[in-house]
Every structure is written in structure tokens, then in C-alpha cells.
Length: 421
Ligand code: EPU
Image (cartoon, rainbow, N blue to C red; front, side, top):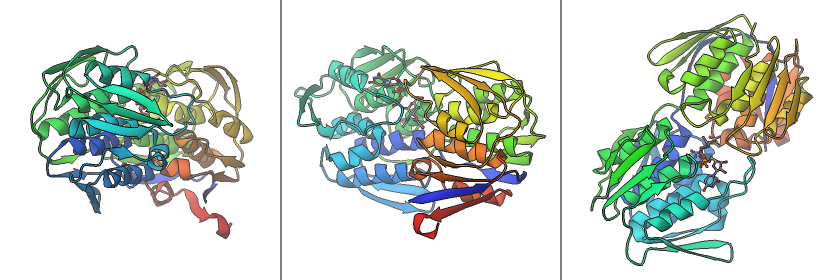
């Protein structure tokens, strides 16, 4: 078990380049199953979720290896079953379903791993694929899926703009017979990245980034090289880390236009940001006004993945802020940990109210989930004294070497193995 030990109140100065997007690379790796030959996915973050996705591809018979920041996948073998051990490692493993169906016409997966964000059903994935001709049977914790007459195009209206369901339908539809239309599709930049990758491989997908996506099925797709987009949530993490710690940092290799709602909220808080084409410069005197309302929403609204991050900043802002978490039922587990550090936050179901306090204090805390853990890192940079974050395996699911990037710009942060502690 690794812990992060952070001594707060050091200003940050320098540049932090941002890794490739976790939520882009996971569906793109899954999509390689639908392609013939070899694909080279560049800018692949070195995080445990990527490792888990590579392990699933290997289990399905592919050859997978890393060359610097690229992951190469050679599609081979015809296995169609993901064992429970691998499914549990990562909820997003459900998105392999559409790709396995595109390749093998039938698939066996267990229900995806338990999740820290409240119940995360996959009913929309199942009902959408059923419209395309898939038949499901549940037995002994496994979901058996077959397409007796092959996959065929369909018009699918999503009841909610689910990111994963939109991606799963795209993957199933690329080689289906006929045209698929997704209405009320999710519009996240990661979906556009999946479209761009698959179109380079010969797919015919139009409209990703809007709520109407059209996919014309093709017979054959061939692997290609693709560079995944920068991770907008990791970018937001380092912007907020720089703001809360004070100093001057350039957060580089990012797409600021994927982050408008985050940048606007920070500007409302009086954080001094200079937005350039591929970077944001943060100049911080650590004096922030609390934003009145942070309501999470589907893209281009304020992302749920950045809710915990900005909450850390609100803890030390002047005034009070209201949060409404509209996407997940239970995404405030970081609150009790922030309160251990002296934050003043009250939660009632999906609403949280944060009263800014003059100072946070170092404490022993636990990362309760990926972004909650990142919020504790941010808070610890501002706190007086030492914070020890336990259960950091959640953080490493999505952040590549955070202790290295933050210490490069002046943070006092170390990763410690349990037996060294
Ligand atoms: N939902 C259903 N039924 C379904 C699918 C979703 O009820 O069949 C519900 C979920 O329970 C949730 C809401 O719909 O309440 C939104 O879920 P969505 O399907 O959009 O999320 P996801 O695809 O499971 C992706 C990201 C999450 C991010 C959400 C929302 C990946 C791998 N994961 O999850 O990222 O929070 O979209 O933007 O892309 C993270 O990176 O920390 C993370 C959790």
C-alpha cells in the first residue's frame, strides 16, 4: 500500500505537462478489438486503469506492449470472455462489450466492478445493444450476449446522455449492417476522440461532439496510429493545485477549449488565468471568492469529475458555495476527509454547502475514489503541516506520477510504501 505524504504551504513555480486522457484511451483501447492488424495509441497515460485495459486485451488474445508513451495493440485471437477478476478492476471494462460483439458476435462478461460513486447500472448499454440485435442472458453473475442474426443498425434514443453507453453503441455499430443513429448522445470530447480514431481506421462516424451521432457500418477496419487528447481533468487538477498553493505555473500540453466551464468557474473565483492555445498560466496570490453554485452536468456543463477538485479550493475561499451533484448519486465521499483537514462542509443528499475557512490543517486521510483522492492532494498543498493520504491506489488509477510532477514545481510531496512508514 502506497501513501502520499505532503507538507503544505509551498508555492508552486514552473511547468507541468499534462498526460493523455484516461477517458479517451480506455474506449480507444477497447475499440482496437474491432480492427484488423496493429494500432499504435500514442500519449497513453501510464496509469493502472490503462494497465487493466491492456490486461483485458491480452486476455482476449491480443498482443499488447508499451513503447515509451505509446501502447501498441496487435489484434489477434478470438477469445470473447472477460473473467470476473479483470472486470472488477475497472468499471469501464463494460465498454469492451460493444467492441467484442463487433469482433466475435458474442461475448461473456461479468457485471462490472463495485463502484465508489453509488450504483452504476448498465441498463442503457444493454437495452441499446439489444436494439441492434444482441440477445442477453444473465447466469451466475455473468452476462452472456449473442447476436444470432449479426449486429444491425438501429435508431437509439438514450434516456440520459451516458458517456459509456454512447461509446459502446459506436463500437458495436462501426461494423454493423446498415446505419445507426444515436439521439441524445453524450457530447464529451473523449467521444469525439473515439470517432476520430475509428474514422482514421476506415469507419464512417459523423456528429460526435453533438447529441446526434450517425454511424454507417463498414465491412472492414484497419488499425492505425492515433495520439489521444490531453486529459482535461488532470489539467484541471494541476491548475487548481497551482491556484491553492500560490505562485506561478504553466499547465501545458492541454486543450483549454475542452475546459471552458472549469476555466469560467475559476475566473469567477478570481483565480488569475492566462489561457493560451495549448496551455494555461496560473498566477496565484491564494485569495479566492467562493463561487455561488457549482452544478455538475453533462458536457459542456461543469464536469462531475472536477467537482471534488474545485470543492478543495472552495474550502479556503471567502464566502460560501453550494454544490449540486447531478450525475452520480454518491459522489461526496471526499467531504468527510476534507472536514478532517478543517473544512466546513455540510451534505444533504445531492447538495453540499461549503463555508470557506481561513486555514486547512494537515491530517491523516484516505482517498475514497480517484477524484476525491486528487482533491485531498490539492487541499494538502494549502494545509498547514503534514497530510498523509492513504488508499492512494485510487489516485494512481488516473494520475501518472503525481508526486513527481508536483515536486518538479516545488511541492513537498513523497510517495511512501507502507513498510517504509
Ligand atoms: N447510467 C445508468 N445506466 C447506464 C449507464 C449510466 O443509469 O446504463 C447512469 C450512471 O449510473 C450515472 C450516469 O448515468 O449516474 C452517467 O453515467 P455515464 O454512463 O455517463 O458514465 P460512465 O460512462 O460510466 C464516464 C467516465 C467517468 C465520468 C462519467 C460522467 C470513463 C471511463 N468514465 O463514466 O469518469 O464521471 O463518464 O462524465 O469515461 C473518472 O474519470 O473519475 C470517472 C468516473
